[in-house]
Each structure stands twice: as C-alpha cells, then as structure tokens.
Length: 252
Image (cartoon, rainbow, N blue to C red):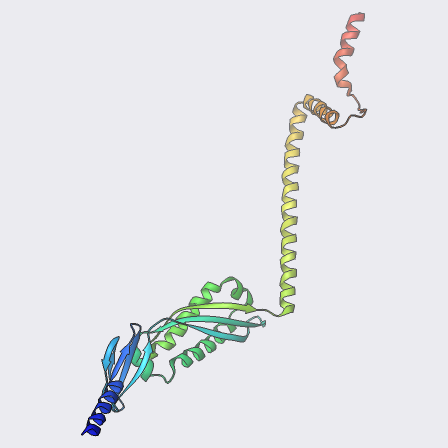
C-alpha cells in the first residue's frame, strides 16, 4: 500500500511538471498536439497534456541582430567592408515557428544578402553621404522578405564602412584640394571686393581732390603715433599754394 501511494505521488509530480508551464509577459507558446498546431498561448500559467502536447517558446521582444562585415564592390568599383545592425521582432509566433526553420538564422542570412545587393548598386559617395536613404531602402526590402515569417523589421542601420588605405589617402588629398580651392576663391572674392572699394574711392578723390590731402595728413598722424623717429615726407605744392598767393599779394 505505501508503495502504491508513493507511485501515485510520483505520477502526480511528473504530471504537474510536464503539464504546467509559466510564460513571461514577453513570451508566447506555440503548442503542437500530436504534431498539429492547435494554439498560441501565454503569457502566464498554461497547462499542457503530457507526452501529447509539445511547446515552442517564442520571444516577442525586439532583437538587435549584428550583421558581420561584408565585402562589397560599389558601382564605381571601390572595394569596401560594410557592417550593419538590424532591429526586428516577432509579430506572429505561429508563422515564426511554422513557416521557417530558424527565423533568427534566416533573418541574418537575408540581411547579409540584401546588404551586399543594395550597397553594390550604390556609389561610394552615396554610401558616405546618403546613409539615411540607404538604411530606409534596406529596411523596406528586408521587411518585405521576412513578413511571411511573421517578422517585423523596424530599423536597419549601416554601422561602419571600412575603406582601403589607398582610398583613404585619395579622399584626404581630395579634401585638402577642396579646402585650398575654397581658400583661393575666398581670397579672390576679397580682392575683387577690395578693388571695387578702391575704384569707388578713386571716383570720390577725382571729384574732390582735397580728399587725398586729408588722407595724406591722416596717414602722417598714424605714422607719428607709432614711431618716435624722425619722419621725412613730401609736402604737396597744393597745400602751400594759399600761403604763396597771400605772400605774393602782400608784396603787391
């Protein structure tokens, strides 16, 4: 009798251990009964029929999938290595279990092939300057391919672009040449504006000759304030003309 009771207790414990499952808030259970899909359960406490029912846990949290560096030849024949990260989550646990063997592996492979295909159609300048556009295009394409698996790709980010050393040097020389070009253009524009101002000043001096004399005197004041040495400067005859006229009229 005690042995029979012990057997019953062991059977009950085994039944409860096999039948009771607890799922977290972000988990769902895809239940198969004798190989057939019967339900999607969770979260919380669920009860399975031992031996008959089999359960597959599926997480509904967003997954950050790292795409390893891919060797890509761009449309302008530049060899680069590009890595990316993909954010996705399971929307339909049934499809994620039934429609594909391993949705993580399948999504990773789909991401790698799409990354090589799309970036291979772009030029290097587009990869460096239009990354947001490329990220959006990658997200749309990968999401379209994974939708039948119950997967929603929310975002794709091109993480790093590794350029060959020769290309880095060439881009550095190009950037330096561009900076020199801008400096020369700015210098030329400054010279052009200065020449226009000088031309305007020459017109004013032509209309009012006394302006050159005032400018001359102002320059003398600036030189005298900066240096304590003796300064020799020519005096225009026009400045002495009034004195000469007065002296001549006095003699008369």
